[in-house]
Image (cartoon, helix red, strand yellow):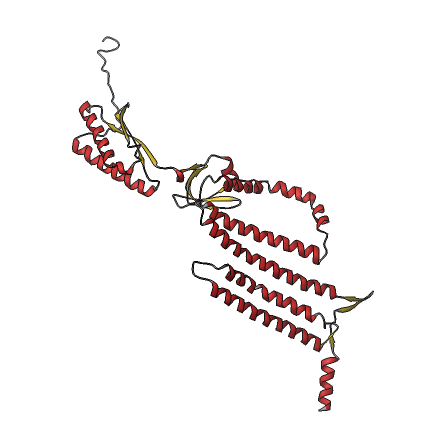
Length: 378
């Protein structure tokens, strides 16, 4: 028994690997394992309690806070385990010039993990701010504010990442950030020139959110593209055309060119011409206009009260008599407008056929001159 105890003591305390006995390595393993288990337990409890507070369709801010703390808690526990292990690990090593210590580096690693855990927590807590922003934007009429929420979320998260990186570089690893930025002066100038388009698009997006020339879902026409606004980002605006194509237009272009917003028009105006043949007598022309006016009167509930529709005998065309028709459809729903137009055209065709009124089509009359005799007189 004494021999076994002596063997165990020799194996456990005397062998040294990288300056540390076996028991120190086992203690390090135990500390990390304990930290991982504690972190996982705390993470599970926080995530479970946060999930209980969530309701379908009604996100809870406190529930989101607990959920945001759940995963970073594992990193916090890991940093604590490493720090405790550093108190009993031998962090010195020999070099050609004498002993050196890794104590400062070890503590910096622990601090870095802790700062990353805090930054990760802040990164996830942006979701809580998003909940309040969504509640605020839901009370406004414009849907452009709703698109601003994900942009702010992305901006804040990028900001958190940058601040965390600068804090670690300057306060933990003691880098001279000012000298580093000054050394990047020429490179920064080159970057600014290369990022000119990016900056112009960014200020274009600021202009869009400030002026609000359109909202999400509005039908707009810009640079020859006609479609519905699906998304407004910091760099570009995405438009879904009637063909189903997704067009990405830089915000700088939208801010500097005219944008026709068909989504805010109070009605849809239709201006067209009905052509009848030249041999139509005046009475039939009058009847053709009366039919059009009667059809407009029958549909007056579809028009604004002050714009009932107009019908006039306007033109003597090259091959027809032109009747000008104008009406203002009182809805901006494009499908509803197309259905109305189709019904109007079908009834007009039927009533003109019943009245014997002929639609004109392009014609050409050729006159042939007959020569009275031979040019030579023979």
